[in-house]
Length: 151
Image 1 (cartoon, one colour):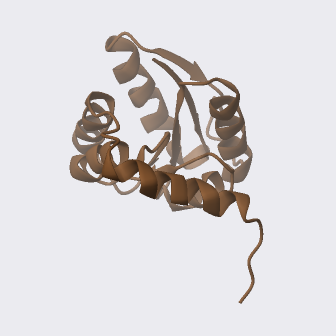
Image 2 (cartoon, helix red, strand yellow):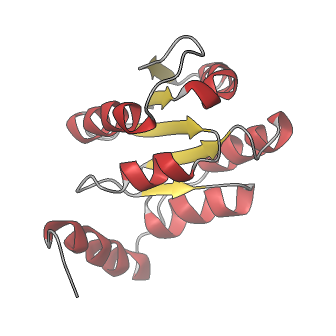
């Protein structure tokens, strides 16, 4: 499996750790930066990862910031991206099995190394169940094609 990984300045340490975890499992991990703790804007790295995931069929993405919230909000702006903010292994497993999430978002400031390892292990082992979940994922995808909606 090919994974694209990106972070902001608040996710650098966990990014290196997650990259190593996936590489030890035999996955290819393409690091899209940044490579230091200088302040950057998380939407720029969310865009880099999401564009690569969309262009590379079958690949997945990993985004990390301080809380994971900003990255997940930015990533879900991309039509075809289903990004899941996960703070435990159950949410990671369900995101993949029921929602066919193709990007996982993590928070360096809210999850410790042990929990991060449990999350990425659950994410890596899970696969989309299809079946009754396929119709729901199709509906999620259709929302992205609706464009801007205002009440």
